[in-house]
Image: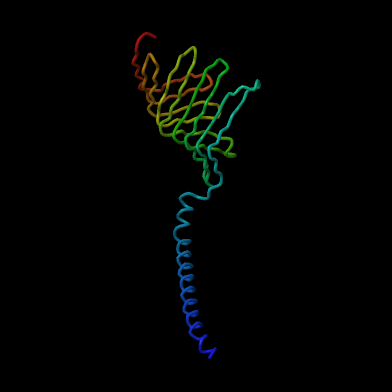
Length: 199
Protein backbone atom coordinates (compact mmCIF):
# COMPACT_ATOMS: atom_id res chain seq x y z
CA UNK A 1 0.00 0.00 0.00
CA UNK A 2 2.80 2.33 0.84
CA UNK A 3 4.42 1.66 -2.52
CA UNK A 4 1.19 2.37 -4.39
CA UNK A 5 0.88 5.77 -2.68
CA UNK A 6 4.37 6.86 -3.66
CA UNK A 7 4.09 6.03 -7.37
CA UNK A 8 1.97 9.11 -8.35
CA UNK A 9 4.40 11.34 -6.42
CA UNK A 10 7.33 9.85 -8.26
CA UNK A 11 5.54 10.31 -11.55
CA UNK A 12 4.70 13.94 -10.72
CA UNK A 13 8.28 14.56 -9.65
CA UNK A 14 9.51 13.06 -12.88
CA UNK A 15 7.33 15.40 -14.93
CA UNK A 16 8.53 18.42 -12.93
CA UNK A 17 12.14 17.34 -13.33
CA UNK A 18 11.66 16.96 -17.07
CA UNK A 19 10.12 20.45 -17.26
CA UNK A 20 12.99 21.96 -15.24
CA UNK A 21 15.61 20.23 -17.39
CA UNK A 22 13.88 21.44 -20.54
CA UNK A 23 13.73 24.99 -19.22
CA UNK A 24 17.40 24.90 -18.24
CA UNK A 25 18.29 23.52 -21.65
CA UNK A 26 16.36 26.29 -23.35
CA UNK A 27 18.12 28.93 -21.23
CA UNK A 28 21.51 27.40 -22.09
CA UNK A 29 20.65 27.45 -25.80
CA UNK A 30 19.48 31.10 -25.64
CA UNK A 31 22.53 32.10 -23.62
CA UNK A 32 24.81 30.37 -26.13
CA UNK A 33 23.07 32.15 -29.01
CA UNK A 34 23.47 35.52 -27.27
CA UNK A 35 27.17 34.86 -26.64
CA UNK A 36 27.69 33.98 -30.28
CA UNK A 37 25.77 36.93 -31.73
CA UNK A 38 25.38 39.93 -29.41
CA UNK A 39 28.55 39.97 -27.32
CA UNK A 40 31.09 39.89 -30.20
CA UNK A 41 29.20 42.72 -31.95
CA UNK A 42 29.22 44.78 -28.74
CA UNK A 43 32.92 44.07 -28.28
CA UNK A 44 33.68 45.24 -31.82
CA UNK A 45 31.70 48.46 -31.34
CA UNK A 46 32.78 49.46 -27.85
CA UNK A 47 35.57 47.17 -26.71
CA UNK A 48 36.18 46.49 -23.02
CA UNK A 49 35.91 49.38 -20.57
CA UNK A 50 39.38 49.85 -19.07
CA UNK A 51 39.12 53.04 -17.01
CA UNK A 52 36.22 55.16 -15.82
CA UNK A 53 36.03 58.29 -13.68
CA UNK A 54 32.89 60.06 -12.48
CA UNK A 55 32.70 63.69 -11.32
CA UNK A 56 36.48 64.00 -11.54
CA UNK A 57 38.47 67.12 -10.63
CA UNK A 58 42.17 67.82 -11.15
CA UNK A 59 43.86 70.87 -9.59
CA UNK A 60 47.31 72.38 -10.11
CA UNK A 61 48.88 74.86 -7.69
CA UNK A 62 51.88 77.17 -8.07
CA UNK A 63 54.89 77.35 -5.73
CA UNK A 64 53.04 79.80 -3.49
CA UNK A 65 50.16 77.37 -3.08
CA UNK A 66 47.71 79.36 -5.20
CA UNK A 67 45.39 77.60 -7.63
CA UNK A 68 46.58 77.91 -11.24
CA UNK A 69 44.43 75.42 -13.13
CA UNK A 70 41.41 73.28 -12.43
CA UNK A 71 39.97 70.67 -14.78
CA UNK A 72 36.60 69.12 -13.98
CA UNK A 73 34.49 66.65 -15.94
CA UNK A 74 31.24 64.81 -15.48
CA UNK A 75 32.83 61.55 -16.60
CA UNK A 76 35.79 60.04 -18.43
CA UNK A 77 35.72 56.59 -20.01
CA UNK A 78 38.41 54.67 -21.87
CA UNK A 79 37.97 51.41 -23.78
CA UNK A 80 40.82 49.02 -24.49
CA UNK A 81 42.42 49.42 -27.91
CA UNK A 82 41.30 53.02 -28.44
CA UNK A 83 43.93 55.81 -28.53
CA UNK A 84 41.61 58.25 -26.77
CA UNK A 85 39.32 58.61 -23.78
CA UNK A 86 35.85 60.12 -24.03
CA UNK A 87 35.17 63.08 -21.74
CA UNK A 88 31.70 64.35 -20.90
CA UNK A 89 31.33 68.05 -20.01
CA UNK A 90 35.01 69.02 -19.60
CA UNK A 91 35.58 72.40 -17.92
CA UNK A 92 39.03 73.98 -17.63
CA UNK A 93 39.63 77.05 -15.41
CA UNK A 94 42.92 78.99 -15.53
CA UNK A 95 44.13 81.74 -13.17
CA UNK A 96 47.08 83.96 -14.13
CA UNK A 97 49.31 85.92 -11.75
CA UNK A 98 48.03 89.24 -13.14
CA UNK A 99 44.45 88.36 -12.25
CA UNK A 100 43.46 87.16 -15.73
CA UNK A 101 40.81 84.46 -15.59
CA UNK A 102 40.00 82.02 -18.43
CA UNK A 103 37.44 79.23 -18.73
CA UNK A 104 37.19 76.64 -21.49
CA UNK A 105 34.25 74.23 -21.59
CA UNK A 106 32.33 71.93 -23.96
CA UNK A 107 29.64 69.29 -23.89
CA UNK A 108 32.09 66.52 -24.74
CA UNK A 109 35.62 65.81 -25.87
CA UNK A 110 38.19 63.17 -26.76
CA UNK A 111 41.53 63.05 -24.97
CA UNK A 112 44.25 61.50 -27.16
CA UNK A 113 47.42 60.12 -25.59
CA UNK A 114 50.51 58.15 -26.61
CA UNK A 115 51.83 56.91 -23.23
CA UNK A 116 49.08 56.81 -20.63
CA UNK A 117 45.68 58.34 -20.03
CA UNK A 118 46.99 60.84 -17.46
CA UNK A 119 49.31 62.58 -19.96
CA UNK A 120 47.37 63.72 -23.01
CA UNK A 121 48.82 64.75 -26.37
CA UNK A 122 45.72 66.74 -27.25
CA UNK A 123 42.07 67.10 -26.31
CA UNK A 124 39.53 67.66 -29.08
CA UNK A 125 36.57 69.52 -27.60
CA UNK A 126 33.25 69.25 -29.43
CA UNK A 127 29.69 70.56 -29.23
CA UNK A 128 29.09 74.06 -27.85
CA UNK A 129 32.72 74.89 -27.13
CA UNK A 130 33.04 78.16 -25.20
CA UNK A 131 36.10 80.12 -24.13
CA UNK A 132 35.51 82.93 -21.64
CA UNK A 133 38.31 85.37 -20.88
CA UNK A 134 38.35 88.08 -18.21
CA UNK A 135 41.25 90.53 -17.98
CA UNK A 136 41.71 93.98 -16.41
CA UNK A 137 43.65 95.08 -19.50
CA UNK A 138 41.58 93.49 -22.28
CA UNK A 139 38.20 93.35 -20.59
CA UNK A 140 35.79 90.42 -20.89
CA UNK A 141 35.18 88.48 -24.08
CA UNK A 142 33.73 85.12 -25.07
CA UNK A 143 34.59 82.87 -28.00
CA UNK A 144 32.25 80.16 -29.31
CA UNK A 145 32.79 77.33 -31.79
CA UNK A 146 31.78 73.71 -32.38
CA UNK A 147 35.25 72.14 -32.26
CA UNK A 148 38.54 73.13 -30.65
CA UNK A 149 41.83 71.31 -30.03
CA UNK A 150 43.65 71.89 -26.74
CA UNK A 151 47.34 70.96 -26.42
CA UNK A 152 49.32 70.27 -23.19
CA UNK A 153 51.07 73.66 -23.49
CA UNK A 154 47.57 75.22 -23.41
CA UNK A 155 47.74 76.25 -27.03
CA UNK A 156 44.41 76.03 -28.85
CA UNK A 157 43.52 75.63 -32.52
CA UNK A 158 40.51 75.11 -34.76
CA UNK A 159 39.56 75.24 -38.44
CA UNK A 160 35.86 75.61 -37.64
CA UNK A 161 33.79 78.78 -37.70
CA UNK A 162 34.24 80.93 -34.57
CA UNK A 163 32.52 83.95 -33.10
CA UNK A 164 33.90 86.34 -30.51
CA UNK A 165 31.71 88.67 -28.52
CA UNK A 166 32.99 91.68 -26.55
CA UNK A 167 31.02 94.54 -25.00
CA UNK A 168 32.28 96.75 -27.83
CA UNK A 169 32.57 94.42 -30.83
CA UNK A 170 31.31 91.26 -32.48
CA UNK A 171 33.74 89.19 -34.59
CA UNK A 172 33.29 86.13 -36.77
CA UNK A 173 35.94 84.12 -38.61
CA UNK A 174 36.86 80.72 -39.99
CA UNK A 175 39.63 79.09 -37.99
CA UNK A 176 41.78 80.49 -35.22
CA UNK A 177 44.74 79.66 -32.98
CA UNK A 178 45.70 81.03 -29.61
CA UNK A 179 47.51 80.70 -26.30
CA UNK A 180 45.49 80.36 -23.09
CA UNK A 181 48.52 81.40 -21.03
CA UNK A 182 48.68 84.85 -22.62
CA UNK A 183 45.09 85.13 -23.86
CA UNK A 184 46.32 85.99 -27.35
CA UNK A 185 44.11 84.89 -30.26
CA UNK A 186 44.86 84.92 -34.00
CA UNK A 187 42.03 84.44 -36.47
CA UNK A 188 42.80 82.68 -39.75
CA UNK A 189 40.48 83.84 -42.53
CA UNK A 190 37.13 85.39 -43.48
CA UNK A 191 37.36 87.71 -40.49
CA UNK A 192 34.39 90.05 -40.11
CA UNK A 193 34.21 92.61 -37.33
CA UNK A 194 31.32 94.76 -36.22
CA UNK A 195 32.17 97.50 -33.71
CA UNK A 196 29.70 98.66 -31.13
CA UNK A 197 30.38 101.95 -29.37
CA UNK A 198 33.84 103.39 -28.84
CA UNK A 199 36.91 101.18 -28.34
